[in-house]
Image (cartoon, rainbow, N blue to C red; front, side, top):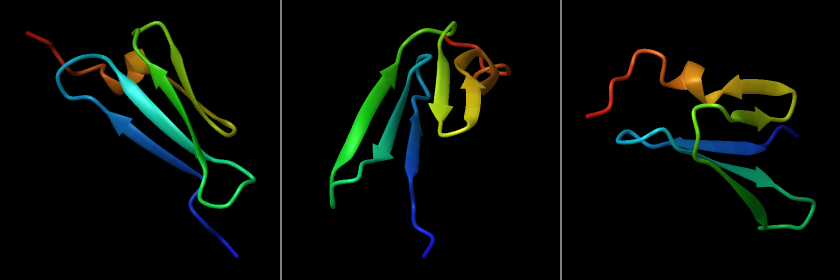
Length: 60
């Protein structure tokens, strides 16, 4: 059965992302926050630099 493994939230006012990853425990998720454009978000095998997420965004 397929199920949701990751949830990615991206802030629209600053370079910040939160990843929630499902754990082996039912109804339990692990949260990892990323606060710098130099960091890289990891969603399983997917590697996504924060700088790529915000590549066309200008913050005021």
